[in-house]
Image (cartoon, rainbow, N blue to C red):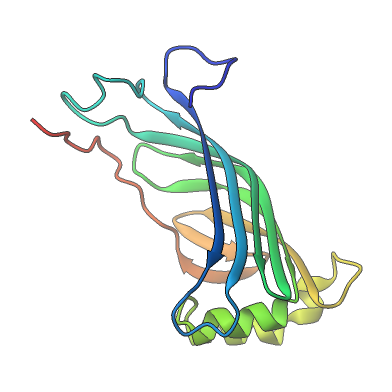
Length: 170
């Protein structure tokens, strides 16, 4: 939906809520996942949007991303800008409760390559130093130079959004 304080249709609010989500191979289902975000486009999202080319995503503000996964929970919010080359830049502070259990589950499911999971697992004191609880990881997810970092740890290539407009249906 278009925010009340925006005009023209190039800014859109997005909300997503998932409940009782199960992932094949996971021992614990996601109890809930919720996303509230505001997306910026270079052209309005309206009935004419796909006549020539779809509007290009230029930025996203994550107002709230909350995932409750059994004994683990993730909370994040922040802003990302997406350049004309499709490369995102920005910083999203992340807090992950029961990070050892979540890390093991994500690695087991193949969602995080084993080398990155091992590197994160070896640095618990460094990454959890910002939190009062030792099993809570609090670190920024940084998108810079086409790469993703969790605090100082490189996780790999950032997702790339098409830098040009995606042709719409004719």
